[in-house]
Image (cartoon, rainbow, N blue to C red; front, top):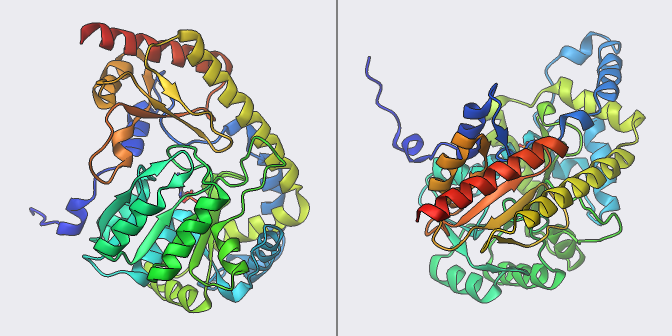
Length: 398
Ligand code: PMP
């Protein structure tokens, strides 16, 4: 049979990151492409002990669970959110299959095909896929070193009347940028004024290299001002392990209820086993200590990659040092198209994600995202050498 696929799925671009991951699996290619955490830092023993606790808890652990998620884990997360200035209750929270699903569910709850979503330029690639799948029009606002430029956001809001602002204000993907508190407030003020809900996606907020640095979430700023305009989502993917596929969203109870309805249709509930494992893990394992260990190791890896790149002294290669997260966003020498460079780089045995994947439209082609958390030491050194060789070969050619 020849299948006739839906136009909405045909519109979705395959993820460049996933495609590169497929290409690199099992080969000796060094990948700076995927946003993969360091495997050697996964708390395997603690997860195993937590799983043992789940399975010794009786047959109920294998039963269907609630769509909104395992209540004891929601209670623990409520406490963790309160420590970050976000007051919430288990009724204002839904556990999801990674925070990726929280993005999908909110889009289901708030938008119809043809609606507009406002994003930062550039933005997270897989959120663009969600928006494409739902037939949304993506409009990207200019962003400088402080975050989305409010004047540009206001112009676009007036012109396109978006149903949603999607933002990763703390250690964004791909740029690693942190929005200033001032910018967060300005964007919030705009969104409240024009009635645009905000989806604050915060998978990296706890991965900060300066443990004492504080970055107030937009959710907490909005709540402190008496608002309910922000839906906040985060995940255990970067702090514990992505295989557990557990994220959460908090927000106005009415929005969470609508997301739960969409989730009933999508998958009834996320893995109850994974949620129970995380419940026991949070109870018995010093997660905050673990997060400090990961963050400090990632900070070292970032500095390592940065000094290796500096040592290559490539003319026109620039970046801003990130203060957290998992990525270095580099600008390549002017005129160098990262997609073309990638082909040369893969032949030399190194991969990265061309920046163009992170733009809704009008990409800046001489940009690339380098992940520094999955490799270290020798592999990072060799990877950077291969990358530098590819850039030189390319620039010599053109
Ligand atoms: N949002 C952003 C900005 C991300 O970088 C990621 C992971 N790549 C996610 C959401 C989804 O993460 P997960 O579904 O594993 O929680």
